[in-house]
Image (cartoon, rainbow, N blue to C red):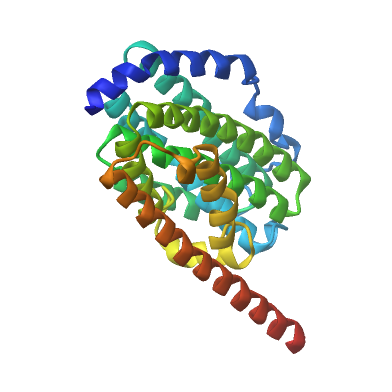
Length: 307
């Protein structure tokens, strides 16, 4: 089945999922989650106080994660372009694309307002990082509709976990409350895409299995083009905010189980080949995840002994 045919066949599913989403999604307002009374003027035209590192009480790893999460959200125009180009702007698909974009748009607004008001990060460095990151844009690695559906199914869940755990690591109940609200949005988005791909699995199991395998084996977070991302990702992983163990146990496996990937019947030789590749990759990832956790625990033990 061609990608165009799949888009057409999935349209009724999109319409149903959109109706379900609109019934369960709850309206919320970013300004209600920002502690405005903590704000004061910065240096510049208002001649306030310049930002300094001591302004923030949030631990470094949580601050790094907040910056990565925000810069990731900032690239929304590119994400919108990618899904609008793939899914179209008409019918139920188009309605969803714009609704998703509208909901995602408040995330960056809310996080930036929180960070600026609480002086959690250097606003000048943050703005410069935003400019660099957005100038690079985002281009999907997957050139099929099924590949993009598979990617966002995992990515929305990964983002939910990253936001939720960042809030917990911040030590600030205001931050945690805000990021929990954003994480709830991401969860609903994940459900939408996950359910769509499940329907696609019934329509064309072999192409869908190949798309899933291609995404799982090459998955990168959408913020991976942020300047210094590798170092930032290691800081985040070492703190346990988002690491290989979480990626495997809390993102990949729950979604794969929902799709019954390893119980799927009706696959041809290519579909079976893709599933075998997926199984082999997950085995290797399990080894890497276990090794990472062991080494992290050893580092923590050495640091504790040194104290």
